[in-house]
Length: 185
Image (cartoon, rainbow, N blue to C red):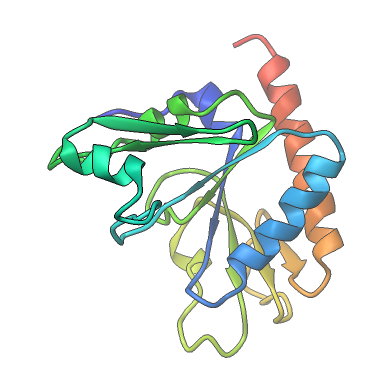
């Protein structure tokens, strides 16, 4: 089993929550403001579904379906690599992180079961229990509910309806991670 290095994991934050909780909306807000401040942010979005990134009749899809292990589609504006697993196991988180270029922060959407620091997005009326009581890696919760009295002091409670407060918390976390990485091991 592969484990991500501690240096790599200190630059990573998982964002978890049930479908419809607002994870992607919050991430869009945070990423835009972090980028405006000159920070480089990477994102890995985990999906349990098959990925179709290009229309089936396009050249790149045809080449992939013909048997290419990887197809890179490149333009003057962006590029994408489609790697066909063809029955091989899903890459570990460490392997996925290694494929990305260096960044100030890598945000992971999903990856609920991985032992990484996480921000849970929890919204009232989801009809599901929050994840934070059962996951010691949840370091903060962004919610539209008041802070529960039984929440450990070590878990930060953020107002989901005040995304600038979530941004301030995340900026402080990035600075702490940056400072931690500059310390000798």
